[in-house]
Figure 1: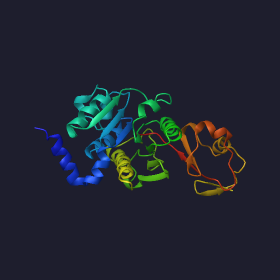
Figure 2: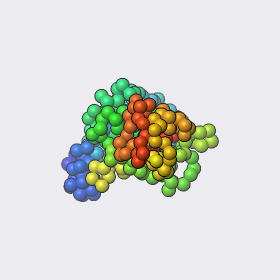
Figure 3: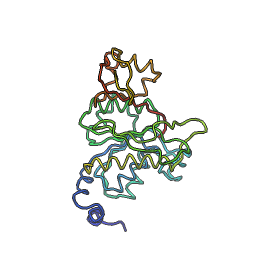
Figure 4: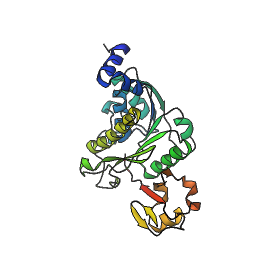
Length: 208
Length: 64
């Protein structure tokens, strides 16, 4: 038996306080890319009781993703948006989700992200990261962007940090550790970076 | 002088494109903040750095 909507809302308010929870539950957050970063960002935000998540990815769950992404072995072959929505609904059954199984481009970004208050950049490709930063911060100036750069390898988890670059642009990561051969991503360090991003979102909503 | 990533440099008079290329940045991978605002990528080639500007270049690396 899953808890009722009222039971879950009550539990959120007990844990976060009524005022903070109202800020979380009225927020719309977009997660762009549902890989190592995005899948864990989405989970943390769903657990926090964010009102609506817009989940965007064009890819399918592959066996090579399971070492660091939130998916299960039983979900290999499913689209990441479908698998993510399934997993989030098990955690937060009353979460409002909107999924788009597409690649985000300079041309479609504005339409896809229109409703979002805060946008999480969770791509793996450096040029795509820079493209989304340009589109969001230059043509959707009322929105916040929480991006990530540098979380590969076995460096210290303590090197991952959150920096506020402008009033509406936050950057998480160590800003140097790039994915290369023999320098891949491990779940723990990617999750630290994803947690930084999710936490930056919650702090923005809390007005911190 | 122009403050770029915390260092004072003699970059006034250069366009952002000229500075970034000269400093070895890969332009498709960067975001540039100037005096508190992100500079649109389409404006790099005609954004001229001025004395007293404060610039931060964020260079994205792959992985996510």
